[in-house]
Image (cartoon, rainbow, N blue to C red; front, top):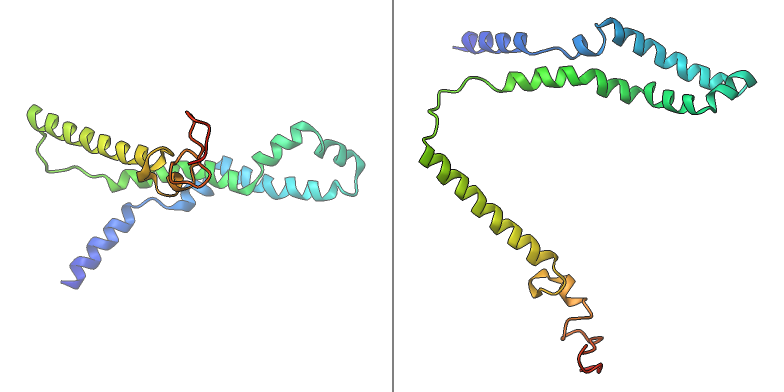
Length: 157
């Protein structure tokens, strides 16, 4: 029994994409990762060499700082891996498609839940609604607030 489980797990791990295949193996990834330390080494040398200092203070160098920032490379090169990895999570299903009536009922339920949630959100963020808690308590338009001035009479209660 254990061997069947281990065999199934090893097959599942073999199908899983490897991160190094996306971050290091393509030629452009190797070029990018090699250029990053060279860029930052040049920036360190710019404190001693005036020609480099002039270049590293330019607007183009500002854009290249973003390009050669290691997290930028990680995010851009990791996009393909993330896509491939997310594709492995979704498999074919055995379910039956919904009929038109069932789909309409599900859609109606979703909209009703959405409307209830929006009503609760509006109640919680409206300063003139007592259900908003601290927004209502601290609101100067609240008649129970000691700083309330009636807008019609201009007097404090």
